[in-house]
Length: 388
Image (spheres, rainbow, N blue to C red):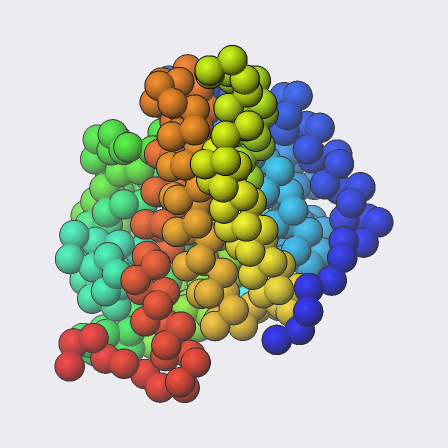
């Protein structure tokens, strides 16, 4: 495991530009968007596309930047510190389903699906979970069968982030009778495809700027050429999850970093007993722990991202980073609420929203408990069957 390097001049310039955009343009709208449950407006998504931020890690021949994963994580962090809504399409485009198409799709599929993501015309969301297949993703029973040059899908998906809002979905389906991952594959489905309907939008504790709903497939027909991952390719998808996990971890880091910065300012402004509350040793200790936790998460994420370059992160490093960052963000934002006192419990202050969102990142993309299983498995070089 190599040491963590420093940012290049280009990366520092990128961070400065995105920080200014995020704080001046998106931060002032974050509370309103959360309160109104608004996703990022389409024109704002296209703005991010025009700035070249949506396809940074995608190949240049499809309009992307061909840049390393670390560059995308820099952008995600700065946007997410200001607004989860602003960071979401960058997260999806540079570390999410679009990367699956990039890594495993055919040349024709890349030419068709990636350019609209880069420009902000479309977002691809991912549909994996079902009522009885969450952490046990390989228990998914949404079925698909091949009929000539068509794939016919029947079943239900749950907890799809972006459901009803995204234009396209990478849907994980069972293409055969084989149990577990051997029968699973992935297919792109357009939102307007006949037979695809959406349930009511979920009213979640956090993540209020991201649509989430059930998806119902009733003889949904899509072209066979939309099959990105053939039957039995689920292991390849787990490899791609390592990229998504670092995107997830970076969002956790961003929430915690923003909460830390707001708390550091607050404790030097708020007075009790005739002095700044930063003068009290218990407040100093709590703030110090926040700094330590945030810094440690940042180093774990950077190590995994820099070792990945333009390819895949090492699964062990990605799972360690996600597990630590997810739990760190919950703890740090909780302390932020406590140090803000009654104000921290008010929706008028950002830290309340940050604490709610932090819990969402820990649930998405494989919970910390699931990451611990993967960490032990990778470290020992052994597979553990949870059904045995």
